[in-house]
Image: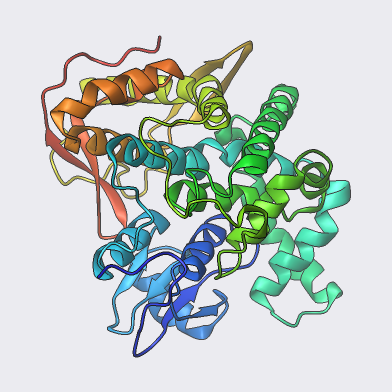
Length: 403
């Protein structure tokens, strides 16, 4: 019998998680592990085993990373969750009904990738208030019992590398007002939703919740400036974060609420409002990114299946592209990992019964997200050995355009 969310899964030995309290994706994974009753031990990346064994295995320094009792090393929160869902007989973080399944993948992608911009903006553009807190957080990731002076001497190098990434995300003084307006709109929509529902997709947590937890907790619900904003304008979002950070259900406000996902034919207005914001704020980036990478593939017919998307020594992205979101235009780096996440949305749709697919299309069209099903590249992007590689060529209905 599959284990249910919130019920402990028996394990002879705990897994080891290398993570950090202020790490965005660590927040996603930690919530999943707690809600699914996994036995785990959390270690900082300053632990000697991380530098000696883990980072060399992966090929770079990145968190979170899981080491299983059997010695397997897992990296990437989405793949880690897949591993647990498969191992434990589908714990239930991914809905089984066709529309909810597709929506869960959309919202996980949005949390992981679409909310990186406000998360990084609110962390790094308010130094006067955030910096003392962040200096201690980053310093104590390296030196866990470090005194303030010690943290001040070792944290700036790490923090500087993080701040240097802001232009790649389209974060600048020119985009600041739009980023703030967009996040406050999202915060208001989430607050309205969590007033009436305990989780994103109903009465139990899903990958939609876990994807959202990364930015909403580790950055936007923990750093001083965005936390103050959340307390002022998103009290129910704060309450949802509390709920997502504990192992039990923690739903006293919803004592008679069904402990299941929404039915496919019962999309609440508050969820529709969130999805419309995803369409307005994030879909333009995905359209432009897909067009950019399609053009890259057209310019490089020599690309072969299995080749790394980013060749060794070629930097972190395929280049930069322009995004027009509403009245705001900006340049950002092509984060190809988003395409891998988008493919998971499309795979969920393609796997749905043919009879259900028109209803899924109609539901996405109603909130402005129908394009997510057709933004496809002539090559898939796959993940192998902790990195992204080009997949096989495939036929697609139409070449994506930056419309």
